[in-house]
Amino acid sequence: MRAPRTISRTYLRTYSDNGQRKLYVEWSDGSRTECDAEKACSSSHMQALLAHARSIGLPLERERW
Image (cartoon, rainbow, N blue to C red; front, side):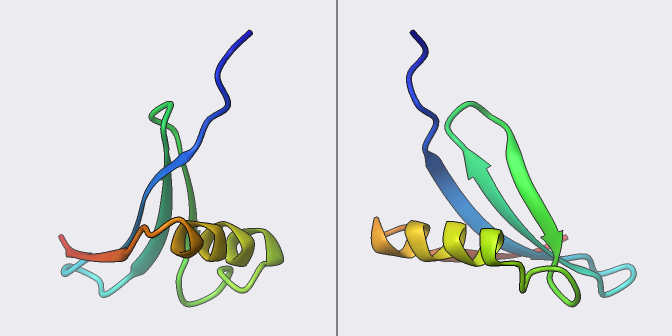
């Protein structure tokens, strides 16, 4: 039986070449869930992931690429 995956990191990345902002949830198995921060991140699924990450003490990191 495989161990359940857990959220390992959340971050908001801003791309300096075009100003696009993406929100990422990284998982313990190396995969990630992402969305466009300006459009699709209002989904209840992504909001629930972010709320869970906050509840376990993971900060929302900010990156500029």
